[in-house]
Image (cartoon, rainbow, N blue to C red; front, side):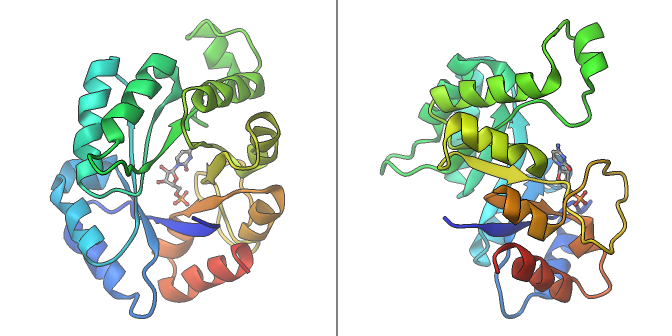
Length: 232
Ligand code: C5P
């Protein structure tokens, strides 16, 4: 898979999501389904969007004991997701178990990527609440190396970190990056943002874009603008 734009479909229900996707008559964007939509609609929303021809990043961020994650990943793999994720904090044993669970009887499997540190976690909270004394960026790279060692395909990170992740884990290790805004756009609640063009320059493999597309007056035009800037 090459560079691509993934639309974060953060909708409260399936009907709104499908009405949004109906606007795309000429292209089949890569879609991210997160916890809100998945918990509201259940696994059928994944099957339904997949059946419409979209590729799917199922963003459920699993974190549990290895056996539970392995069995849950087998279920997600059966839904036809193209990318799934988990928390690298669950340890290498959990990540390896996840890969085993994801592998289908025919040997294929979705790509598996890891969340390192959530961007909502500050260095100060990491230290005071989680008792992690290393600097935040070191933790991110350490977790990325763990994910690579466990055999994962990449990480979710800020575009600003994708260059360093590639240096540490190789160019083939995927960086999937949210926090994208157009140069003339509204930042919303995102703090550190990057334009699609800058994300491309720094080396992101996939950008995850939500509100700049879903809340645009013309979502199809906004999606095309993202693709033009990021994929070229
Ligand atoms: O609307 P917006 O473009 O900010 O959406 C970004 C998407 O990426 C949301 O689904 C958000 O939950 C997700 N995300 C993020 N930052 C992270 C991890 C995930 O914005 N560190």
